[in-house]
Length: 464
Ligand code: PLP
Image (cartoon, rainbow, N blue to C red; front, top):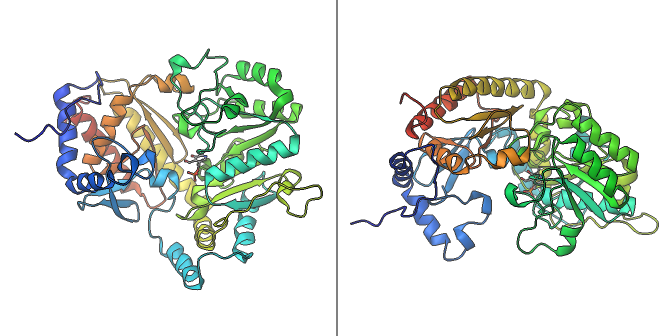
C-alpha cells in the first residue's frame, strides 16, 4: 500500500468534514508531483526545503517555474492566477515589456558599481512627486532595511532609545520589527496593554525597547503613548495593517497618531511597503494624514529587490555623510541597484492614478460578489478589502483588531489555500490576497468562480 501522503491531519478545521479535507489535500498532491520532488531535493540543503519561510506550506510548497502577466506556472505546468504577486510587489504582473526592456538596457550596461548613478535621483523625484511626506529619499535593498534605517534615523534625530509598533504589524525581519508580529492572542498580555513578544534569537534589548500598541484602540494607545512618550523615538505603523488581516484604520485613528506624535516630538513612520499601491500618493494621501517618514519597498523596485526611506529633510539629513558631528551610515553594496531603479521607474510610470482607480474598482466588485457568496456559506466567512488588497477571514464580520482576526479558523484558511490552488488560483495561506493591474473583469469573474468551487470542495457551500 502506498504510504499515506498526509498521515497526521494538520488542518483540524471543524468547518469541513475530514473526508473533504483529505480529498482537497490529495488532489493538490496529485497535481504537483514535481513540486514534491523539488521540495524533497531542496530539503537536503535548505532548512525546511525553502529559502523564504513564507513560501513554506503543507503538504509541500508549490514550486514556481515561471510567470507571465497575471499568471504563474508551476513545475508540473499548472497555471495559477497569481493573487499574491510576490506578497503584493508585482503590481503590474510578470514580464511587463516596458519594465523588462528598461531592466535589459541596464543589464547590458552592468548591474552594480561603487559609484553614484542618475537612476537614484530619477526614482527619488518620482517618489517626492507622489508622496506627501517625502522631501528627501534614500534607497536600500529591501523593506527590512528601510524600516531598520528609518527607526535608526528617528533615534538619532530624537536622541531617544525606544520605538512603538502595533501588535500583528510586520515591518521586516530585523530585531525591533520582529516583536509581536504574530503572537498568540491568549498569551500576550491584556488587550489594552499587550506585552512585547519575541521569537527565538531576538536580542532581549530589542524586546525591552519596543512598546507594543493595540491597533484601532484609541483609548489604550493614547494611554500607552502618554506613559512612554519620554523614551519613544518613533511609532511605526502600516496605515492599513495589511499583515495582520488587512485592518483598516477606524475614522480618527491615524489623525490621533499624528496628534500624539506631534505633541510628544515622536517621529511618525508610515510603513507603506505594501500600502503605497492603494493610492497615487499611498495610504497617506488616501487618509489625508502625513507622517514624518515613510518606508517603501516592493512595487518601487518593479520586481527587483529594493527598499526606500523617504521623509522630512531634517530627519533624512541624518543620512548625509557630510553632516557635522556624524551621520547615520546608510550604505549597502546593492543599495539602489541600477536594475531595480530602472524597473521601478518604468513601473511607477505605468502605475498611474487612472490605473489605480480602475484596479481598486475591480477589487471592490470582487469584494461585493465574494461577500454575497459568503452569506450562503455554512461557515462564517468575512472579507476585508481596501483598494486592491483583500483578506478573507474564517470568522465574524468586521475584523478590525489583531486579536479578533488571530482567533479565526487558521486551519480552514490553509485548506482554502490548497483548494484554491486546485482551482488554479494562488492566494496566501493566511487569507491575504491582492489584484494586479492586468487582472481584468474576466479575471475577477474567474477568481469569484474559483472561490465558489473551492468552498464547495470544502463542503461549506451548497452547490458544486
Ligand atoms: N514592511 C512591510 C509592511 C512588509 O509587508 C514587508 C514585507 O512583506 C516589509 C516591510 C519587509 O520588506 P522586505 O521583505 O523587502 O524586507
